[in-house]
Length: 136
Image 1 (tube, helix red, strand yellow):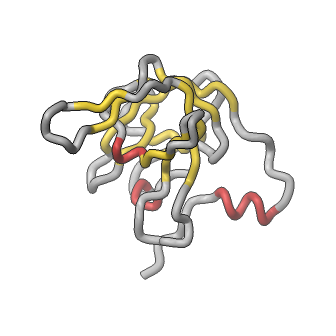
Image 2 (image 1 turned 180 degrees about the vertical axis):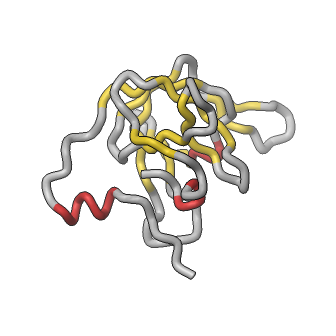
């Protein structure tokens, strides 16, 4: 729900209609911040549908452009590589199937929560969607 490295940050769950801002929370972790209080991480459940105010911008690594701009505004929040405990998991998936870690999104973009995923039906589903525990 919130990447493992955001456990040191105050957080709250996302709600339909929330305006979220892409932000660096330090220590190499990007996430969604509450638009009214940028110190609060907004935890988004996998399957949550988002719409960005503009086409999604990624940090560009080709050193020619500052940003790469994707032809997408709609995305679904996902968690990937869950079998790898010490890597970033929070990602968004676009309609063409492309998945991008939140850490690659340019800061200060605004997304609105369109729809939350269906309610979890079992305890196993609830545990699967919870925060990762840091072992060590």
